[in-house]
Amino acid sequence: MGVFGTTMVCIAEWLLFVFPLYQAYLELDEQRDLLLSSIDFNEIRNHDFDNRKIHLRDLNQLKTLLTDEQKAALKAFNSLRNKAVAWFFVALAGYIKACSSTYEVMEHFSHHVNTRVFILVIVILTGLGLAFILSRVLTNEKVKAI
Image (cartoon, rainbow, N blue to C red; front, top):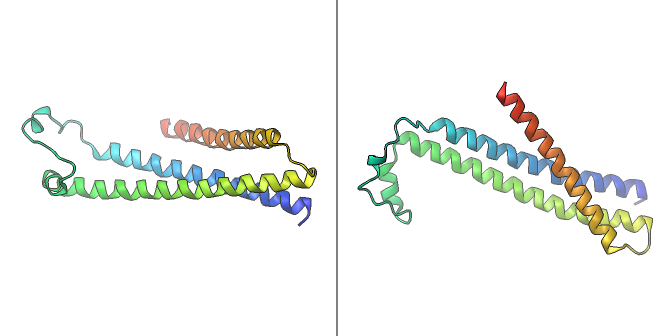
C-alpha cells in the first residue's frame, strides 16, 4: 500500500478511537441523567435507614428494600453502564490499532523511526482526539443549559 493509502488507514483508525470514546461518554451522560431523574430527593429520609443493616453481599436483602420502580431504574442504569464499558473497550482497541498505523505511516517516511518522535506524535494525536471530545462535551453542556 502506498503512502496515501497508509495515511488514510491511519486517519480512519484514529477516528475509530475517538468516536467510540465519545459514544462511551454519551452513554455515561445518559446514565447520569437517568439516575438523577429517577431520584426523588424529597422522599429520602435519614430515619428510613437507621435501623436497617444493608449488606451488599446479600442481594436478597437489597431486593426487599427496593420498589419496582427502583428495580427498573437500577436495571436501566446497569444496561447503560455496560454499554459505556463496551464502547470504552472498542475505543481502546481503536487506540491500539491507531498507534500501529501511525508507526506504519512513519516508516513510510523514514527507514528508522525515532522512538521519541513516535511517542510525541502519539501524544499529540491522542491530545487532539481528547480535545475534540472535550469540545463536543462542552457544546452538549451548553445546549442542555438552554
